[in-house]
Image (tube, rainbow, N blue to C red; front, side):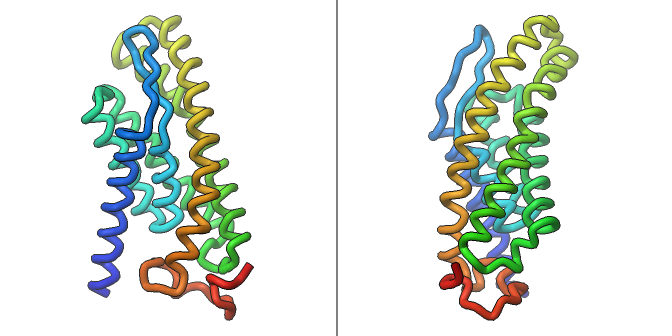
Amino acid sequence: MEHKRILTLTQGALIAALAYVGFQFLRIDIPVGAERTAIHLGNTMVVLGALLLGGWGGFAGALGLTLADLTSGYVTTAPKTFILKLIIGLVTLAISRKLFHIEKEPSMKSQARIALFSSIAALGLNVVLDPLFGYFYKTYLFGIPQDLSAALAKISSVTTLVNAAASTVAVVILWPALFRALAGTDRLPWQSTVTDDRDPVQAV
């Protein structure tokens, strides 16, 4: 039990670190007047973290992206980032565990399908929430005029959509590979609940 707890904490720390790297070093900043938005792959790690570790993985990814905001000139958006990324993680958890029962699907094709639908649901919701949240955030918290906030929200919706598409592709590619690498080891937290008799790595 102690070994599994340490492993889970370590994996969560790794997810947070990779989310940080995905934003801090794998992003393209887009200046919009005095504001900035960015295209990045940080959301990829939030979804992968939730697929791997459930709610704890989503939290770790959200924390990593929040820390990235705090250290890269996006300080004012850090609270918004944490809330929205945590929502991504929770939606991924709900779709993958509650709806599709990812722990009972040993085949690579099933894992890829679950990763696809989980990503579309979680990141698709973020495409709606991010500009909406940003509009109210800028208008009522920072006092930015509504017309300007609305224009910034439209720009944000485009970059958020691009981020969602890129992250979805990345998750669908990376998750089956990660599952293949971890299946049959004690590094996949829910591996013991897989009930299929086939070898999870060999099943297709």
